[in-house]
Length: 317
Ligand code: PMV
Image (cartoon, rainbow, N blue to C red; front, side):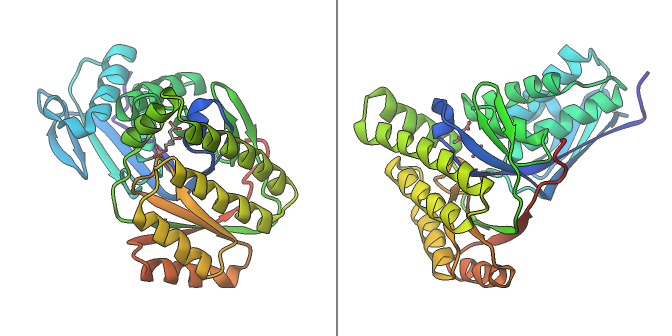
């Protein structure tokens, strides 16, 4: 039995601390963000071939361009290989998550698409099946992903994660605001991850020290979160940005946005995600400062800003 229309959705994610070092087994703290979302609809096609409609492309699935190769792969693996659907389908993908900005857009699209296909086929989807399928898509999109992006798609609460499988919910007990500034430039996660790998493989002492330093900062950040020490958390985030600069994954635009958030009174600021473009984040515990930080980010060149209050949705999730 198939439904007439299958629906799937997913949200964005924001890495608070630990990007890049998480690839080498360090801890990372990340937050699901539902202020932007992706929705996928799947239905039987009236044509004799499957079609897809998304912001980047409208046409036949078999003619999809290389830039969305991971989407093509997700469709083939999930619909055909896993669910055994051989009839042509129409995929409609609507997303407000900015693409290639370090907010997990590719993992979110994969997640929503997989959910929509399972809904269409009226088949149960376990968390481990979902994570496995997202991971396949992310390997095409990013090379060797840590698994953090995929994991965050299935979470409602902030987590501290260490690959391959260590996951713990984190509780933000006080009131803390996260502001995201989009540089408007495409992030280059794959390139940045490969560049850091080159440094580590060639025994670059500075890169190795930077990764180790970030690991310690993330562990201290976890303590600061547990104790609601927001000033300390901000300080650790700004230090993390410094080490990401050492690894060569920031950009002059991101550095300018980080500086502008700090000038506007943020407790801390850093790039988020793969870097070399994409987004940065800042925190404040003062609700009256949120708009000032956003305004300063726009003044310093941010194309868009988002604000999010960090809290724990339901400790059981
Ligand atoms: O740019 P994003 O949102 O895909 O984040 C990448 C995070 C890295 O730590 C750099 C890579 C990874 O796979 O965890």
